[in-house]
Image (cartoon, rainbow, N blue to C red; front, side, top):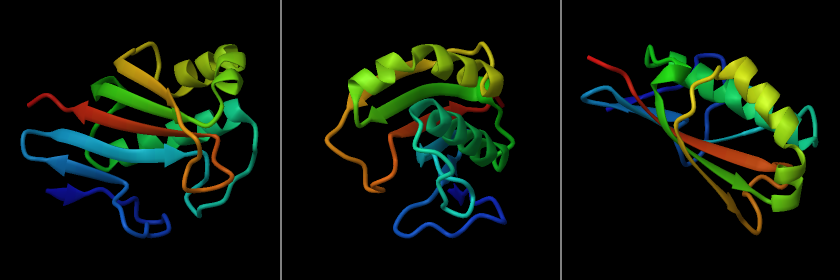
Amino acid sequence: MNILQPPDWARPKGYANGIAAKGKMVFVSGMIGWDKDCRFHTSDFAGQVRQALQNIVEVLREADAKPEHIVRMTWYVVDKQEYVGAYKRIGEAYRDIIGRHYPAMTAVQVTALVEDQARVEIEVTAVVPD
């Protein structure tokens, strides 16, 4: 097992940003809309999605994985209506960062996320072909 930690990011507390397991499966913990220094630059839902997706790509890069290797995403949102209302801008951010690759996805509304400013958290599993 290899912990994936971009070298200039703040160290997480109590979790890893990603794990690569033998067979080149890559597991990315829930990414939220803050930057590498754990700072939010927006409270806008689509803006936080964009940052969370960028964070996912950076963690995947640590395992020589690319967005097209993503096989599963789970989205946790604090407000379903906010999520649905931002579909168009979320789609634009997704295509800009992930491309037109669409893995299996689940979206779940939750009461809250651990970080109070977070509007969305996205968890990813990727498989890099041998």
